[in-house]
Length: 255
Length: 280
Ligand SMILES: Nc1ncnc2c1ncn2[C@@H]1O[C@H](COP(=O)(O)OP(=O)(O)OP(=O)(O)O)[C@@H](O)[C@H]1O
Ligand SMILES: [Mg+2]
Image (cartoon, rainbow over all chains, first blue to last red; front, side, top):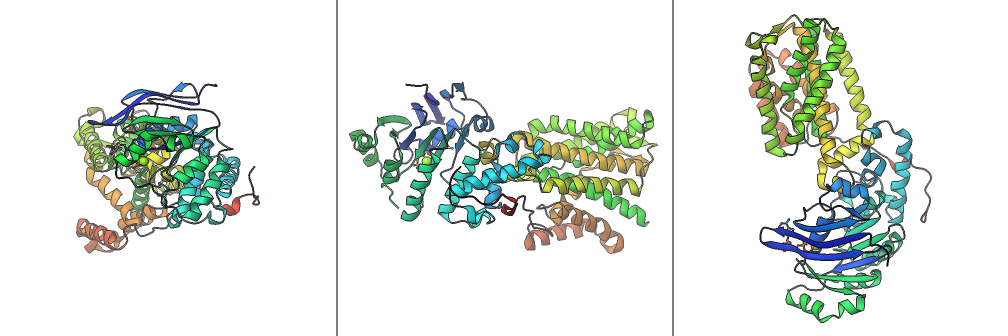
């Protein structure tokens, strides 16, 4: 098999005595959509945060496209091509939908001073942003203030914003959380399209239907470790996984 | 004298903008007194001791001031909120004490002999800085600064170097304050270190709070009103600090975003090419 694009090796993240990540290993390969599941507090978000540099790893290494990014600052990790969304939606609430997407336009983010005089690139920026906004069905809402969006639109805008940065690896933290059934169904279609534009996706979800229909492979976590990894049906029915979910008072969220 | 009043209004507008440009990137600075002092003394040394004309002296001191701000800002801007405010107040204190102890520029006694700035000079400076800020307001850089201010962590996940943007705002503010300082010194002919007190830094921040921090016109209005009003109402002048305090309180209660609160939008979809549907 080819070299994975993301290699997480014995990654550790402790908060005082609490081990949010306890020596986890994970490989993400080209073309994959990997579902990351596990009960509340398993360390899924902590893994995303450590990979993207939000948390400083307390041990282990992260290789992205063969480069060690373990202790690189967040913006450099973004520049290398890792994009993400957030479990608790984090839009620039006072900006319009279009402005939110434009913030991520890489030529401006990478060279902010040059953006003062880069008039020709401004039209390119808008074209890029509109492209992703259209793909995520937000084209008719571009001039709305972000804080006025519905929950589903806000989540899709977060995905669109990440995509404007043209990441090769996209990390989605519970994109369907709080969506109704209709919105979730639309999201499944959207992510199916998005996957053609990025090299790999990691998807954290509690909605098992969504996970099943989108992931090529599942990784189940508990207590900061990987407990099972493999095909969806296999992992979802694995006794360890069932035990992990039963062991805590998590209800399988199907909203 | 009317031209005096207009001159000081111009200086205060420049200072208010120097605070505003830092605030755009999310840093509130009370160090403007220090950068103003640096601009004044720096340009003063160049004109008085080395015989430079005012314009290049002014520009050189602005650039040096921006560089000093970058060096000081690198550690200081890691701090946020109250801690950053305290550090910038500290910078203003240190600048004053340092100047009082440098005999080359007159120490406590003050520094004189600077001349050549008039009302026209400050008007030109206000127009140039204002035009620059307007240009900046509609640029992608403004949007990037907004992003850094609203949520620095999200901004960095979008490949924006937050530290660089903050240093940029702080340094640009320092340069503008230095220009104000240079013009002030060369208009007054004589300054003392105490001219650049912490109180001055505080007043400048208050102009901005009063006028509004959402766009470049807020600081302009705030500084103009607060400079000219006390001149026309003598009562106001005597009770200046009190009136100021009350005005700020009233603001916070009734218009927490300042007198001019509207936000400029940096992009409209209408600019875009004709819509196409489907994927590329
Ligand atoms: N910033 C932090 N400070 C202290 N503890 C933290 C922090 N972030 C996460 N933790 C802890 O790390 C553990 C893993 O949390 P994490 O958010 O990764 O869980 P999760 O798998 O994403 O759960 P959920 O499904 O509820 O989102 C939890 O015990 C959590 O309390
Ligand atoms: Mg989580």
